[in-house]
Image (cartoon, rainbow, N blue to C red; front, side, top):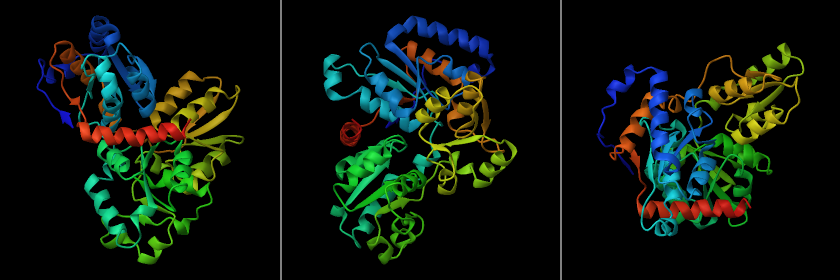
Length: 378
């Protein structure tokens, strides 16, 4: 699903260039390619990358905006692998490619090492095996698979084929309601915390949400009775960043900063999510801070680069990172100006590197699952 080309230019020399030189060369390519090029910058990116991005947002929002551009022919996604896959799936819908006289949008990921540890916690063969094993205990016709947008295209395709749906952190509740209107059970992957936190607000109990561990052997480490009594089978996956936040961190801020509010992402563990003042998607976190009055105090439980950016953009408020331990999205951090410049100059030379292309069959079923999500989110 990806192509690593040697390109016209080797990467090594770019490492020795200063940020100022890289910035200038990136701007030159942007000027040459004009509106045909879109550089997408995820919220968790470094500031110097965000500064050069044409669009800034979360993973699905960025892909959707880029796909809606009539001029765009090249996407350089400063994010992680699954995000670039989604951009390819949406930007190269068959009807849109036909409108462009068969011309595809080329999608590039500046560094192929920029993956997502959460997405990697659910491999397609593991999910297929789990589905088969579940079928030995309960009727899989009575299970709707739901995958978080933070997953590989192969999992989105699996969900599409099996009558399921994709969700984001902002519409997970709508996706689960849709699923429960069809079947009595849900298989939710790869992030257990988003699944659990969302289902709890809908009245599903912890006892009705067994966790499937793909490495635990028979039935994902569960008994037949647990699965028979289940409402939501959660995959044992998590975000390495959001798992770092603890209830002790919340208690410490409330003790040391009277009047402070706790704002967290629903990928945080239940014990943190439940005691926060506000829980919401990346977009909701940004919007909440933006709409708060001067003097508001926040401790925010999400990726460090975003929290630091919010602190800079809102000096009228007091903003803290919720954890005393530095935790950033390490794979996102791999996208730096050197990789961005290298990938752009190769793109301009007509020899794109790190092109992300999802095969037609996988893309087709992934779109089915994504379109279901769009429908329920209206």
